[in-house]
Image (cartoon, rainbow, N blue to C red; front, top):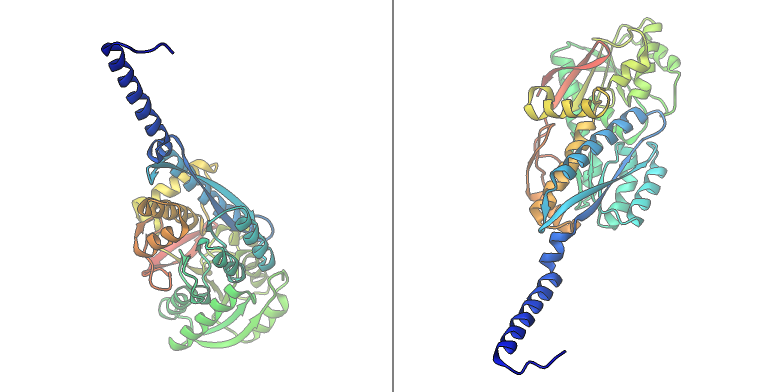
Length: 391
């Protein structure tokens, strides 16, 4: 480099050096780096993507995927960086052991935010793995014991059995004028919890429980149990379980000439129930409760249904696609509020904040249950759940 001996040369060199230093400082600053880089956050999903409950599991996946695509299209800013979500979906097969294996796989893969699991029996053991790893979890699992474990990053984004079972019992007694009821559960954490809540609330509202039975979660022939129940002459049969068994159960009730109504919780509130029953075995003889208000009556719910159908070949969403959809948006909003994707900060933002989603408003109490969880009662028309009332 030639020597700068005159004043003009030295002045030019000084300006050049200052500009170079400024450029170096700017390019190495966190702000400049943040502007150039996306904040990529993996979102895990645990749901039964195969097996008897795969219809619901795939529906949950479709809801979550739609939300991920919407967030990525919007590119919200988190700490000055555009957020991009990556969905990591895993099949827990509605099996507790597989659910634990899925949880460990997601944790080992660096996932710190999870939507699901879908089943209470899966969530109970898997939640311990997630808690130990500091993962933020948003689950629709309804067994009350799930949020009684004291896990500070586990949030329930659906109604608990205490709401679903109780309100089905109240509606059965007050509106359907049921007097005598038989109760069956599938021995899962979900089914047992739901049946217990229904039975207790039913008795408190004047229902007589004339028979209590249970079946295994893999059973397909319910003839012996239903024959025993038929002799007790109930006005209704409450089933604590899922569509995969409720459909065949409804068909076999019809074959046996059982005219009692079939009642249940959100596990029955799906077109899968009618599909698996076949024929006309499911109609206004089947009633169920689902967490959330009637989404078709709110603009947000209508927008979700339209977007879901457009993304899924005009197929209608089933029971919980909307909650998995809302859960993803809820986590993205909490990251924005926290200005960070640090799980501890995001969990704190979830606990303190409120989010208006497609299925309702999400705000949490000290157990991380929803502060307000409306329940909608459904029957079936044309093979589809048809909302009757919300309360």
